[in-house]
Image 1 (cartoon, rainbow, N blue to C red):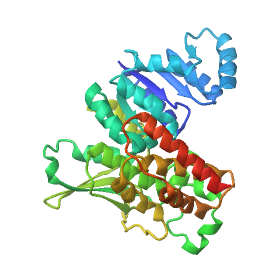
Image 2 (image 1 turned 120 degrees about the horizontal axis):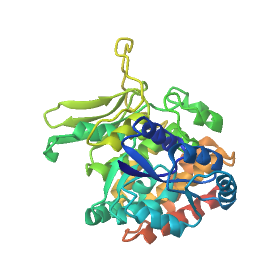
Image 3 (image 1 turned 90 degrees about the vertical axis):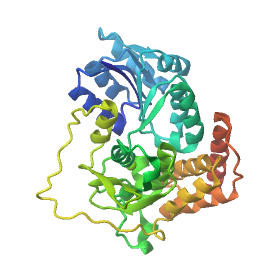
Length: 383
Ligand code: MG
């Protein structure tokens, strides 16, 4: 039995992870589940999976959950402080840590888990985007592994299995469905509403990542994520609206390997949970008989300028990733609350990046400082 700790268990990836776990109940047991506020779903998850520990960020939600737990005979401990959470994350029972929370808020627990040599299944791409350099060097000291739960990166990992010579890889091609506005007229982008931005045609995801997919900021973050995961700089993006080919690796002999599946996060989750074994994902199989066509096209950088920011940040390095990510998180939140227009998202991020001083990253605090300054500057511009 592998021991699992799931950070962000009530979100989209957290729920899918528990679905995979329930199909492989003989292989996994749950040590810890965490969430922000959703105590009622947490209670359901406690009843079904019997975790040893749970943590809720919100103190009101903690009280509500405690009241519910007292009515039952369930033997789950509710952690009430971040210190307690960090202690449980570091102990020997947290073998695998699934990082499925949203945003850079996940960085502290992810760093802590890497520091204590845990195997990380990483869906919280923001943490890795901003701190890839220090997380990688820390993991090489502690023996921690960082394994992607992102469909594109899982695809690349699968294509690279058994590749012994890194020099034989010529480039990585990240595919993207193109989001809800792939074929929308650029002149109409000013009228995009939050409701439209969060209705993704292919993937069912949380609000933040859905907006990121619509602006292609998600793909921008994924280029940076791929750079940290695979230590390869030649990374291209290809639009593939059907969402069947999840990414491609091209080798120096011009041979390409691609990974295909229906667009369902349970596949990369099961791959990560089971690796090196294959376990049941509960996902559907692709029906190749009825699948008539797979199409690919180049991304339109005029419509989706956010894509350009990845290469610029990789060139700049240092705190540029933290500045980029923080500005984006602030803009997405402001857009969802109706405070800024859709086109302002990119404009504001580009402005903040332009006006910020980029510094070297030596420790976690350098990242938190850059994150804070970028948020302040972005909020000023939003006002
Ligand atoms: Mg992805």
